[in-house]
Length: 251
Ligand SMILES: Cc1cc2nc3c(=O)[nH]c(=O)nc-3n(C[C@H](O)[C@H](O)[C@H](O)COP(=O)(O)O)c2cc1C
Ligand code: SF4
Image (spheres, rainbow, N blue to C red):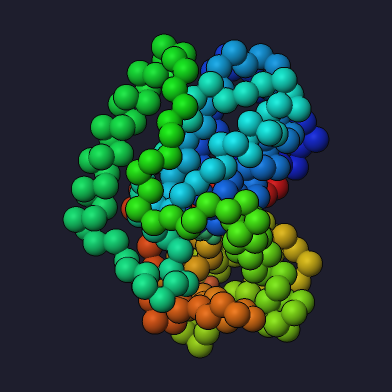
């Protein structure tokens, strides 16, 4: 999606079109919101969305329907897949073990088979989010603020906290992987070290953090929110390589 955002209008030709993305801050990621706004869906007869997440509540399908309404469309189906967590800045974060990955993978595979059947047969299936493992009491204002806190975390750090949201510590070996996987052009390798440039958008995917081979990329504390990336490990999907991610960058 990110690699197509430079287009004024993103053309599509399919009759069945789906949006597949991770949950970010209880909602849809910044890039997905931009992508849906720019996509021409005139040819579509059936729209679906699949959200992957660690386990929080998710009410973003409503958000997608709001965006689609402007195009006289709506989601025919939506589904949620619980995956491993890649957001390692929290105190209680645990890196998924091999057995976590295998057991979740088994559940996901079974669910994907049933999702595939629903999509092929263009069945209406709007899954109610009942299987979240941790929730917040749903309150529109509280949830709105939580979403914004994560999405604006970088701005809060840079402009109120006076620090960069991300930084590379002394373990950095200058390999440049963080620049390659960074979906936007925010990182610029300068004198062989990554520099997160101010005033350049970040999609908050955390790929720079998770793909750094030295666990050198850290998140700074921002006012009111402590980061535990120095203490914690990292996780990225075992099948998603640096090359895969770097091919999805902003052009
Ligand atoms: C910035 C950020 C925010 C996230 N927010 C949430 C969240 O609010 N709820 C949740 O369940 N998972 C959240 N996650 C976890 C991801 O959704 C989850 O790790 C991802 O779906 C895993 O997909 P993958 O296995 O394909 O990498 C967040 C991840 C990141 C990087
Ligand atoms: S990926 Fe890590 S080690 Fe490589 S340049 Fe970036 S911060 Fe340094």
